Length: 304
Image 1: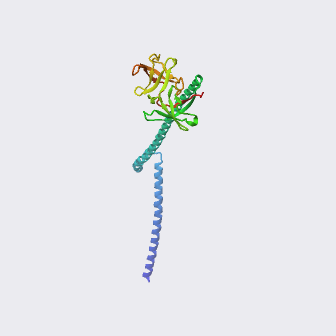
Image 2: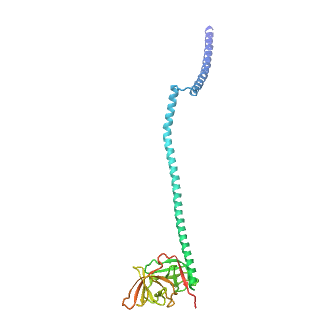
């Protein structure tokens, strides 16, 4: 019996000791946690204090974190800079494209303005010309725009935007503000073909009876050719006793009723004997340029 009682007492004592151990371990965890909190609070206090010198743990931690941040930030900054450069290049490309478009449009507008100014000047000159001509003659001048010209140098014709519907007929004389340029040869309802003086030859259907301005009763000749190399009209059948001189102005005589009388053609630049010495020949420099014609006049002669 005694041995049983001692065993029971021993077991009771062991239980109490185990319980006390577990209780002490639980308190120890709480103590460790509280100690850690106190340590970190103290560390924060040291960090934010007014100390001018860091402890070596603080310096180590700071230097380590700063080095890692710098090592990470370098490639990050490089990548960010690359995307920023790409964005800037895209913006510059778009600005450059818009600038090119603006310059192109400005060039177009400038060219159009210059063309309109030139056209306005030509039309003003044409208006002044028609007013002067109507005061001096009884002819009617119908202004027309050159619609097209032949690219063939041996087919010297232009197309104007007046036709049969506008009262245009074949063989009507056509001139610019400077002088005679040719005659209407074919007519359609809305357009007409004009044969230029540069297409003159010796055939009677194309020859033009001419005289000298101010010497209408003293001078006479036939304009029936064009020297392509010299760019001069050829006036033939000039009588030896004719008073024609270099510098005189050649005009239509009205003989033959193909061209109205008094239309200026050009200036005499030379006079020589003809092929057989019976008559003389003269070279005439046209007053008008046959290249780049823009506006012309069709001369309408009132019927008697």
